[in-house]
Amino acid sequence: MKTLLLAGASLALAGTAAAQDYSYSGETGPANWGGVCATGIQQSPIDLNGAVEAEGIMPALAWHTADSVELTRNSLNFTANTDAGTLILNGVRYDLIQFHFHSLSEHTVDGEAYPLEVHFVHASEDGNLAVVGVFYEEGDENPELTALWNAIPAAGETGMVENLDLTNFLPGDMDGFRYSGSLTTPPCSEVVAWTVLSEPLEASAEQIEAYQGLFGDTARPTLPHNRRFVLEND
Image 1 (cartoon, rainbow, N blue to C red):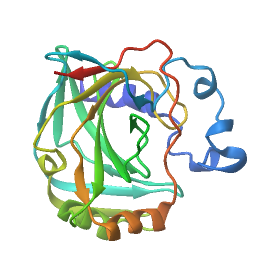
Image 2 (spheres, one colour):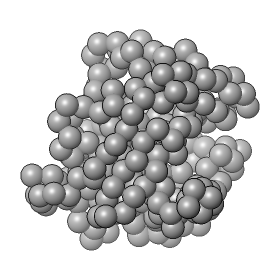
Image 3 (cartoon, rainbow, N blue to C red):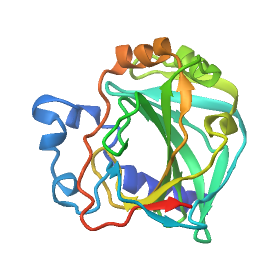
Image 4 (tube, rainbow, N blue to C red):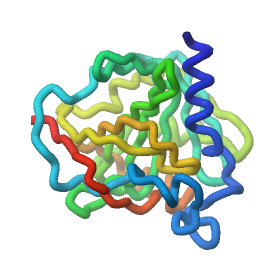
């Protein structure tokens, strides 16, 4: 099962590490991403507006402390690789494979962006993905971000964080939004069940500036809903 899961996830995520093929500005920026990025009708991110209230839509998360989290980096961003969690959605199990950050936030709420957003990527056995997004607003220093930021390696190298409690990346209120969408980087595969939590966590101005200083703008602009329903947990 694990082999199939990883193979399916690799197909869905294929190309996301090829930083030289795309960027966030200029000739290789989002306006010029081709393939499904340009032709798809369920693209992400979106502005979370006009949501329909619904009950029982949120996934069941079972995250725990990761003994070690390996950080990899390319020219655009860094990725934290870990299997310390699972997610159950509509009776299907998804295993956590990695998480990464974007600044500004890729999703917006009624047109307003947050300074930072983290995406926790989970993969099912058949290669579909369930991603949980969590916003950060400016506030107190965040210990988990400090541990991660201190371990970000040079491009092409790896870093390590030990004993990282993933439950600390979740807000106290687990209400949020659900919709069907895509990866937010090429190949923009439309295989993602999105959950974006409403309540933000806090990060200090220095932490936000440190991420932006390393990576700059890493947010794809929002895309049309195209008749998709956005559900909001009631």
